[in-house]
Amino acid sequence: MSKRFNKKLLAICVLAVGISACSSTDDENEELKVAELTEITALFNPTVKWDASIGSGVGDYFSRIKPAVAYGKVFSVSRAGEAYAFDENSGQQIWQTDLSDVDSKRGFFDDKEPALISGGVVAGINKVFYGSENGVVTALEAENGELSWQSKVKGEVIAAPALDSGKLVVNTASGVMKAFNASNGQDDWQIEQDVPPLSLRGISAPVISGGGVIVGSADGSLAVYLLEQGRQGWTADIGEATGSTELERVVDVDSTPLVYGENIYTVSSRGNLSAVELRSGRVLWQRQYSSYREISISGNSLFLTDVKGHVYAIDRNNGLELWSQLSFMNRGVTGPVPIGNYVVVGDFEGYLHWLDQSTGEVVARHQVDSSGIYTTPTVANGVLYAQSRDGDLEAIAIPE
Image: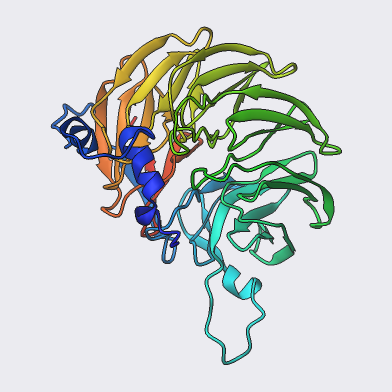
C-alpha cells in the first residue's frame, strides 16, 4: 500500500471522526466537513524575517520533519534528502548536503534515489542527525554539512531521535528502539517493543530525562527505559481500547512525551490526556482527549490539538479545561506551540493561526503557502519557523 498520507484510510478516519466507524450517515458526513476560515480582527501582522526553499519538501507523504535551531543556524531537510543550514538571523544558506548521495551505493549510470528522510531534524554536540524510512541514521557536522557517521536500525525512522548524555536514541515503526554513541555512531543497546497488528502511521519520538528514555507505544502505553543499558523501568497505561472492532481499538501513543518538572504529559490517539509521575510512572490524573499531535506547555497551561482539529488549553495541575477553540474542524491542524503571549497552530492550507494563550481567541493569521503546514512549527529566540509541504521555510516574528 502506498505511504502517501492522503491514501491512508485509517489516517483519514482518525483525522475526520476520531477513529470512529467510517460510515456515511448524515451526522457523520457533517463531522467530515472542513471548517471554512472566518474573518478575524487581527491584533498584529506577523513579519517574515526571511524565507528559503528546502528543495522538494515532503510532498503529500506522511512526515514529521521540522526545522531545528542551534549554533546560530537553522537546519532542515526534504524527504528526498536535501539537507540545508541557514544563518539564523539573515537566512543566508551556509551549506547544503545531498543525503541521497551519502546514503547510496548506486553506480555512475544508476538513477538517483531519494533518501526518504522522515525522522528529525535533531541538532547537538556540533552535529545534525536525520533518520530515514530505510532505517538509515545519518550524522552531519553542523559547521559544514560533512558526513560524520552513518548507521542502520531495523525499521522506519519516522520520528525525531532523542539526544542526551552522548547517546542518540532512535525509535522505529517496527518496534525497535536503538541507542548509538552520538559521537561516532557505534551501537550501544537495542530493545524490541511489541507492535499491534493495526496501528497508526506514526510513532512516538523518544525523550531523554532523568537518566531514562521515555517513549509512547502503539499499544497505548507510556514506558521508561534506562538510558545506560536500555533496561525497561515502569509502564503506564494511557490509551483505552474499548471498541468492538480492531479499528476502534487503535490506541497509539504517538505524541512526543512532554517532560516538565517532575511530571510527564502525554496523550493517546484514542483515550486520555494523562499526567504521569516521572520517577514512579504513577498516573496523577487523566482526562478524555484523543490526539496524535505534539502537546506543549506554557506556565500552568497545556495546549493540545485533538483528532478533530479542536485546540484546547488545559490546567497542567489537575487536567481541567481552561478554554477550547473549535473553529478549525478537520483542517489538519498541527500541534500548538507557544510563543510570547500566544500559541500557534498551522493547517492543511498553509495558514498559521495565533491564538491568545489566555482566551483561545484567534488574533492573527498568516499563510506560508497553500501546500499546507504539516508539523508543529519550531520556536527559538522569539522567532517561529514553519515549513510547508512544498518546502517553503519561513522565519516569522511578531512586530514589537
